Picture: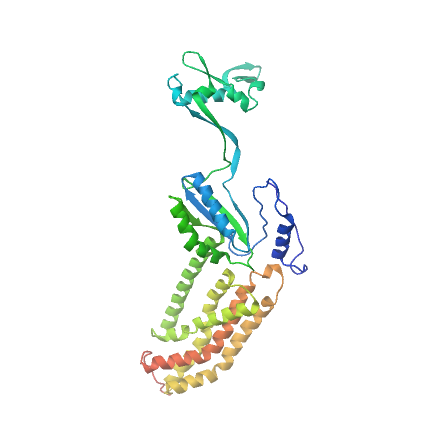
Length: 414
């Protein structure tokens, strides 16, 4: 194995994208003779692992290798998929001995055969003797001139039970083959991993894996009985992280609801406040489109953080409406007054938050690239939620009040 590392200029100085440089390097290198696999990698941000890391599990190595070739051929049909390889590779040349049926007549078995062949070529310890402070072992084996090539194996004779010399090819079939350099096991089962990368500006790894799950993997399981497919790499890590984020967001939403329910002394008033949360997703989507960004894991983390921020504006509106109701002001009038009276505080609160994120959105350094999608979700999501909340929250409050679902607010005694 050989590795070549190129240190290039930082993102602020160079005038070419890292992926563009890697693609040119790949094209200039071309196909190299006697090289099993070549990988052109670069430092990546986000979930660990390769874009494609497909694990095939089964009992037959030949079937696993054939299935791996089928997977690589199928993935190779997509433009933008690069550096496909698997970890089940041929090993060194070897000779396999298979005992003939006639060997039993001569009183020979597989153990006797293998012991004598091993002793002839690798040697066997027959004695040891001390010389001063050192101990020397005595190994018995053929001389170097008689164990140097495959022809010496054909000339080898096996000693039978009666002391007779029997040519090896009389009692065993000798086949020259190549085994496997390394056999990987997962939970005691043999496995092979197919790995590869993808040019993100051309193809999407998750979409290709989804298509493979519908078309390729079921066909492989039918063609090779006992084969199982397991997806690893970025897709698996993203799924784990996504599940964790969803679980934590749900816990956070429940916590927000419980706090608001205690504050407002009702079960539906918190829904009015939290109704603005889905509207933040509108700004997140359009913000990523405007910035030319993909919706990545940092973007999702930004959305999760956004849910706890956008409810602040709704709380201001709902508290104002409930205070107005306590002073015997009709709900529809209080809803109109809430939008006008709280417009400036809501706007100032959102603008200061968005303004604080602008330097990060305009940053071009490599270190800040992972944070830009997160800041984009916060800034644009808060913008859309702020504009919509002024109209949506009072409207939902009035609708729920029409159904008498919010309960009565005690009037003021002043």
